[in-house]
Amino acid sequence: MIRNMIVWIGSAALLLLAVLAGLMSGSIPIPAGEVWTALTQASDTEARQIVWNLRLPRVLTGMLAGTCLAIAGAFLQGVFRNPLADPGIIGVSAGGGLAAVVIMILFPEQIALLPIAAFTGALTAAVIVYALSWKGGASPMRLILAGVAVNSLLGAAMTALMILNSEKVQAVLPWMSGSLNGRSWPHFETLLPYTVIGVIASVFLIKQANLLVLGDDAAKVLGSKVEAGRLLIILLSTFLAGAAISIVGMVGFVGLVVPHIVRLLVGGDYRILLPISAIGGGMLVVAADTAARSWFDPIEFPVGILLALLGAPFFLYLLRRGINR
Image (cartoon, rainbow, N blue to C red):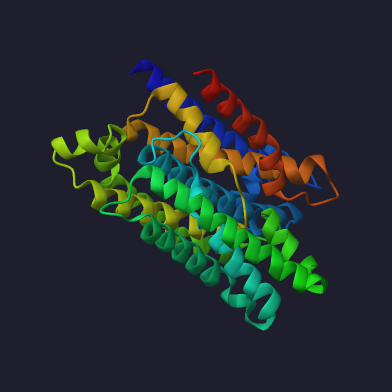
């Protein structure tokens, strides 16, 4: 209990520090005192304009996206009983990516539909994976295999489309890399209702997730409707991850790294695991974005690439640990 409380307080403190650093850091550093003044007092000062109109919506959008991805990853790792699971394993990222590439390359005049298209693509991919894996039920192993196959197919289609339209690839790369550059209040307002709905829905699936972690047979003995529960959790994870990538692009490894670290600290009880993962996901994306735009100034380094550079070694550590076991 004490350890869980320490992790709760520590994760919340780290999130607040990440948000403060995100508001202070950039090409024009702003002291903490001026940040507070800019947030609490309406004025026409340069600090107010930078903090309120540029950095605050970017930080809040990144926090919501990280929260969505971390919750999705935490759920999927439990449903698949696999610590290497993340939203990409069920084709969410590839489906959203392909839909976004189609809009940006073939229908650039409809760019306003990009978030809706990416979300729809992610949801469609997840439904296809579930349908392909169904055989009197959808076991975790069949879901993973179907997800890998659909991911490969959609990834190949995405690459082919970019090669055949190479003159338009430059417009696609920032989104494919995952970036918070240019994210403003409309982006935050678009993502906020999806996040709120997803978080509320996730609370009602905590019990089901705890049962599925025990295995299908044990869950059935305890009265769980395994297939219905698994489908609901996968759809919710797709909803959250699709909403995030539709706004910030192909940001990866958050759903892999954060839930696994939290599980090592507090165990697998979703009553504790899920909220701390949500906080940790928001903190990681905000901190990584702050580092990406501060360390490489004046270049806006995509946060998705930085997270991949950080997440890939951790993925290899998990793989090595599994081999040793």
